[in-house]
Image 1: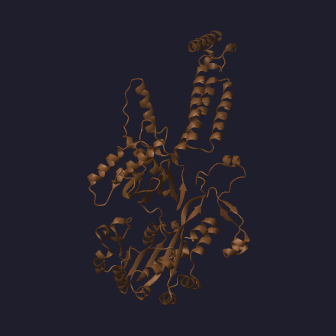
Image 2: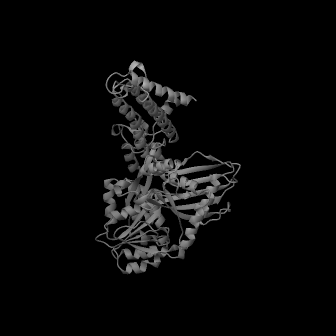
Length: 598
């Protein structure tokens, strides 16, 4: 009834406007929003009302979208959009020429929305983007279908909905048909898409590992980001009336199906591997994933570890190595003969760094061979010949080393030299003008040297062939967007061996504001999400053995005495590297202290 009256009134206003017009064309074309006699134009007013309705709908959507995406400046953006349209739009309402004012009003409505869409699409995954060709095609198809016109829309399977991530079942010596069968069963499991979402969120958060702790009350989730575990908001156990299982329990079952484990077994230790692809088209990034589950007293714990298929660093500088250390390292990598140890504590990027080291060595005038286990095969390096053995069949490097050495290569990277037979053979071959490089897990270079001596070969045979050892530790870098400077205390500078005039300022994480309201208004740093750190760099300890060090190792292999001898010879270690990072504002004293305690 109201709509009928409203339409009737508009028609009456329209005829009144036309009748009251004098000579010339109708007033609806030549005058502003008002007709002769102070009446609203029945043609112009509905157009303005239509734009107002569209503006209201878009404003409501933007507000809800910003709230869902947890935008910190949501209130400010809403206020700007309101003032922009309501303020300037009202002024346009009184412009004498309607067809000049109306397009400006439309632009005031449309342009801010388009700007917002462009900015938001840069920060969301592809499946959440709006007004893209795919999204517009979908909206048009939905509209045409409502009026009876059928349009074809590319149908996606259930497992393709959501974030741009694909899963692939993997396993050594397993029939491809079995792997494909696992994948199909997992895709049809109820929790498959939820599993994809958690994997995608972890990778996008730069996590290298993810942990789930299932209990009767909740599921705790943790991400290992930059070597530190971060707790996410725990998910309470949810079972609605029509379901017998919590969604997270269903997710766990789908993951077990994917790796070929028993979903019903909640106590035994089970594990497997699969592969994920993030992104679309040629920009896909591949990760190999290790999945391990184990029953606990309160439920079940799951560990998920991600290994990128490509080393994320291009060269030694990207790793964080200073020029002085780079020159020293290259000299050791390109020497004609000897043993060279590359080491790092667990989870400190040893595999990635040794690949970059090999790329920095001379691979063009020398024959370089990489002897490694096919089960943990690394990324292919140009001009480095692979020499593979299979540990799953009980093989060791001795399976391939004799044949490789027969070809008289100049340099061999033997990643695992823990077998005494392998180490003894390598020591013998050093005298034939060959350089052997190996990997050892150790907290520093001295520990790596002593660890090599424990492999069952007489120490004197090793020490006289050993040239040098390098160790790396990864340390978190301060977020460049929210770090803040401060004047370090004189006592701190004294402890670090620095003079007061050497350092103007150190840097630290952003300190909280005095009140909660002020902190809430400032918001969380969008780059580091309030952690204070973003990314990691490496500290290096490169020690070259002198005759004095060799004699000390054979006479009294005391780690502290050996370290003191290196310092006496002027060879710097992690302390020197860390202080440089502090002076350059790349990390905090607290983070440096944490790393030095490893």
